[in-house]
Image 1 (cartoon, helix red, strand yellow):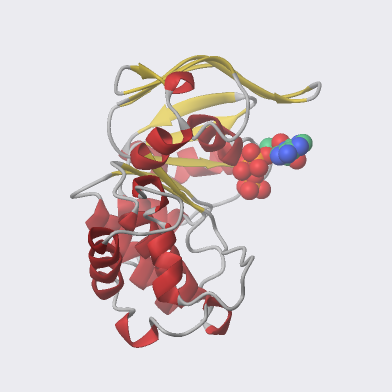
Image 2: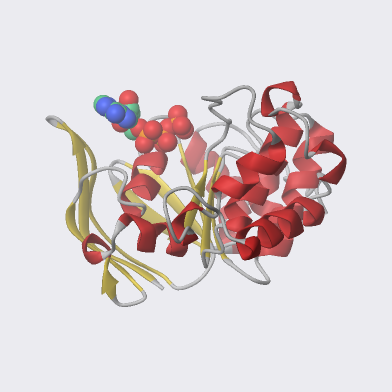
Length: 241
Ligand SMILES: Nc1ncnc2c1ncn2[C@@H]1O[C@H](COP(=O)(O)OP(=O)(O)OP(=O)(O)O)[C@@H](O)[C@H]1O
């Protein structure tokens, strides 16, 4: 359970989110216009930006969590892989997901390596494990990001626009993984992909004018969508089902 109490976020004098009060009991999808503050909201939850108000994760004040405790609690998966080391292999990248569990600075344990190998297998990346990340397609990179996040073994996984760079086939593959992860993890999804949001079927927080507005399935009503986005919708088809 994530509780936001009077949450506010600003960049300098630019107020992005103001006085948000919300209980995220389980899964959630976050939608809203470009620049509305979706990524800022999840970055605040992950303690990646400073904020006013309070955030509690399972009753613990997020400000009290160390970096390593936070890593064991939440994984944040960005839309696109920023590759700092183009020569890192998939195997070594997924192992990085175990950084919070390292017993000393230099060594990953046998257990860390076993868990990383399991996640590589789970995501169907075994044939690519010795390949460099830079040599993979966007879809394969996204799968590698998910494998590293799973290796982190956090309860909460946040996806920030996971299908933004993917073709329809890979979007469907990723959509199925996200849906499956809901069985074992708390999944928070930021997306502009209404088909994906509809398929994942989480409660919706729509960010508008610095506030979060909550919806259920009613969000996907053509009239509601038209009012929120200002464009016509005609019976959104669930293409990932
Ligand atoms: N590091 C930063 N410094 C200053 N302003 C920022 C910073 N990060 C984001 N912003 C601004 O805050 C606002 C909200 O950004 P944010 O990335 O949270 O929006 P978003 O809803 O995720 O957008 P998008 O859908 O386009 O990804 C934007 O106006 C953005 O320009």
